[in-house]
Length: 488
Image 1 (cartoon, rainbow, N blue to C red):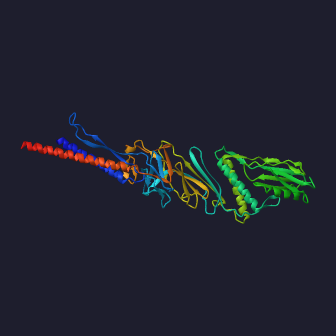
Image 2 (image 1 turned 180 degrees about the vertical axis):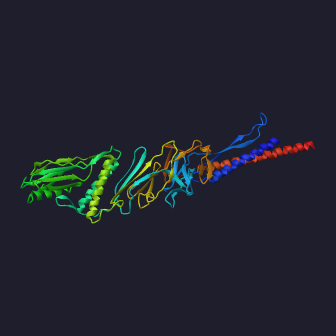
């Protein structure tokens, strides 16, 4: 009978624990990223072979199963679909790290990506180099983001305004009207973007094609000159003398996109050299024979062949762009600035990706482009792709950080400390980055795994069990009373 009292009492204790756990689950049924608790019981040591001594609470375990995802449309709401945890730190104590499944984030007053309790979300952050894009650099020249296997690299180039443009050169010497200069810039921009898109190609030194055509001092006195460049015919009728005719032909050739032409007279012999040069490194120009009245008059001599690929080609075309825009702005009456306030600027952000199953050197994620030294305009639209955070601005795209979810050898060993946070312990082990085990995305939140209907049923079950155990105590008490009365 005394044993029955102890058995009933232990039953009250364990069912009270169960009621506490279930009520805690119910109170967190709408808590983002909450993982429900499960209580498990075990029987106590038996006093004899067949008679037990009650029950005790064996453990209360977190159920780290996947919660459903609710789409919110908010850029700053993050989800983990699969294993792992976000890593957070208190900015007041940055060396102390916490772990959470709750992805309710925001951009704090200092530009950092922070949780709802103002802890910084940690990740692998990129390294920025190059120039700062100022408010004067309004024109996007080229932008690319590529993955070389170990790193993600973003390159963005801008220029100051070169509109409405201005005439450069002079008749017979690389003459370009304002509209032709703008046309050449567009051709250079297209070539530069194409070079950026092929940066992973082998790097080969880049050169611009240069061709010359020799014409004797008294080579002709009448007729029509014609030359075909990139499939387009450029014509010029004889006008006054050979020099005037060649000068006008050169001016026509300079109308070709990405081409410059000039005429030089030899002061000794009086012979002429017609130069036809590409403005764009690496671009091959198709230059045909110079004809007079349809007959071959002179064949071009290739002085420099077009070549280049990979990084060297991109760098060379970037220099070509810089030269052209400096030329236009100088012709507009704007002095070429001194670095770092140059007319053309570029910067690079490089993110070295985390290695799977290794510890992660993570830091706070800064979302202010000005604080990162990338753009004086600190604002950018955030996008998340495969856990990588990008900021876009004016057509440019900057790789900022990688959200690297971590996991533990024994998740049950984590210490829950409230505020949707866990601490690591010796039982949990150290966090390691897990690749391909979790999908990181935004614009959604993971819901609580507490099932209200299940928890309500559990409440009723434990309530009845509590009542039954209390009944066993009162029954044992009646037995004791009867035994005492028998003694009387």
